Amino acid sequence: MANTTMTDLANAVIPAPRTEFTDAALDAFSRRLGEDPAGAAWRRAAAAVNRTIGFPDRVRHLWRYTDPADLLPGRALLQATESPERTELPATPAVLLRPGHEPLVNAAAAAVGVTAEALFGEADHAQLVGRAVAADHGYFESLNAAAFDAGVVVRVPRDHVAAAPLRLVIAAVPGRDVLPRVLVAVGAGASVTVVEDHLGGGAGAVVVGVTEILVGANADVHHVLVQRWEDGTVGHLTVRARIERDGRYLGASAGFGGDVAKFDLGAILAGEGARSELVGVTLPDRRQHLDHHTMHRHLSGHTWSNIDFKAAVAGRARSSYTGLLRIEKDAPGSEAYQENRNLLLSEKARADTIPELEILTDDVSCSHGATAAPLDPEQLFYLQSRGIPADESLRLVVRGFVELTLRQVPEGLRADLEALVDARLERLVGER
Image 1 (tube, rainbow, N blue to C red):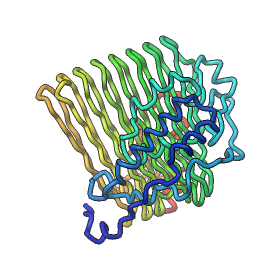
Image 2: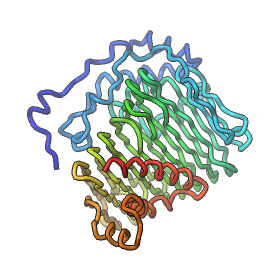
Image 3: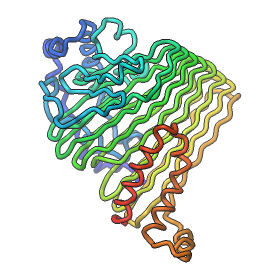
Image 4: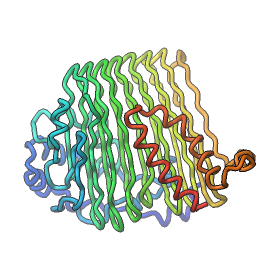
């Protein structure tokens, strides 16, 4: 397990405060985006937090594997940004987030009874934003809160059942910074599936994104995060769900692209009887560095959570994982489970894993497990001895490794994720 050295600390890059975050600049940027005055107030407050929160300390275990300086936007923010080119919406219900412009919503999205509008296009957005990810959540979250340039609010009315998944398309732009912010507000008793698709990018692309998901009482929400950036892209993505009484949330993530990426994924079980499940698959290869942190925080009693995260690492890539289960003192009768499994496909591949439990009450049931191991040569030999070629044997073993996790994804979306996994496996085989 790697340790931070004094040399690391001496060489750490501590960025200067963002000089462009003046009140006048923030107000002008907010007006240019057509925001309600509440938007400018939110940005000013977030900028104040950003100036005081401090840059992430490499001594903290959440940053011991990834240098936060690698993920920083290197250009001045609050600038005009052209919309990504050649990004087309599918025929299925979809929303395109466009930096510096209102989100583009196709007719199919409106047809399923889900509304999507620019963040802070209405005054009441101030009552929703920040409930799951406040500006003081962390440095990158405060940066996004002050300077997000592509914001959307997705609303699902009370007791409404969306007939089809809604896809949010968020494109990274070569040589540009993109700061998307997504807020999904699901009314009590409603049901919806949202696919957040991060694509595009290239040399010099930087993405700092935040997604908040508010799950109403007895609502049922599936959220699928797909990150398939092009080479040369770096980014930091934060996703948090807040789940009210008897609400149900499934958060699935698939991390494939980019050079360096950090994910902060989790849920706050705020109401009694709330349930949350996080499942994830990542398949880094070449020299990719993908860092995942998951968190379940149980605020109320008789809540249930589960985490199942798997990584298969090839080439000289590195996958890092930290996972936290926190049971507050006012959450008796809660159950929480956490599992992280890592499969190393080459001698140069690396996987780090740190599962954690913080339990502040006695009446709970919690467990966790973590492994990191190379391919079992006996499994490959068994398959090859039955006439299966070596490359196909490898694909079968890795596919079997992630299969149980993929099965937890809703059936209507599983085929898309399986296709992405299969395409990456073709590349992994060549990188071994």
